Length: 327
Ligand SMILES: [Zn+2]
Image 1 (spheres, rainbow, N blue to C red):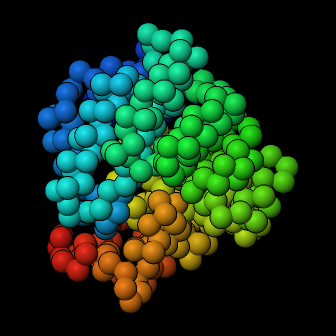
Image 2 (image 1 turned 135 degrees about the horizontal axis):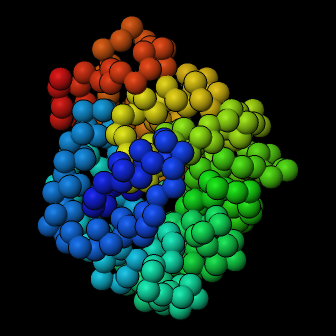
């Protein structure tokens, strides 16, 4: 998920609901607003969002950069996320997403040179993962391979956003590079589901985004689950297509819109979510030796999550053995 960004794109979302086009919106609009906000404002925004995630039972989160797209502003985003990680109570995993889109003022090749030769070496101590987006309007598979291969050389763990907007080589690339996860996967190519199932790569489905883009077909998530691929269920919290912290809603939509069973969706939001962050040895399930992170539900069973669609059933959240939120 994309924890830190400034501004609101509610007007754009409304235009999409009405079937109207929206001029000058998109990721680059958020990039302008995020750069202008500055580090202190972003830390405060992040703090508020983390409090809301806590009320929704979320104890471990990923904070991707990717709304700065320059050396200084990507560093600012990672530094702000690092400060929030130090504050707690939730545990944060930091991901550098310089290869999100090409910034307004740059040419793609020149920008990627900077990502590979300046940003990746410089952010090594700040972020543990590197991510890239392979889709029309973002980067192609060759460009993503270049960024992620360089990141792997420098010791980053890898993630890939892929096949959100069109079919592509994302699954193949993620498996080839040994990524922790490949995210979105609205479109699958022949053989992708089997390939993913035979690998250690987690497929991350983002039901909120799928619904917002009206791409919520049962097809791809169901065939991935059917093939035996490990699936994580994520909020994809971001300003464009999924600005909701409500994980009960996300799990419900994974069932009702993507066709996952309640068990697949709950495992997707817990242990497989942890696996997508390579954090499954320390969290994601209740086991001796793991950190005690719990979301207590005011419900008879987890089956009420999709049943009472959209209701935040979390009555208390425990982070690392301490009650961090009680309703
Ligand atoms: Zn995303």
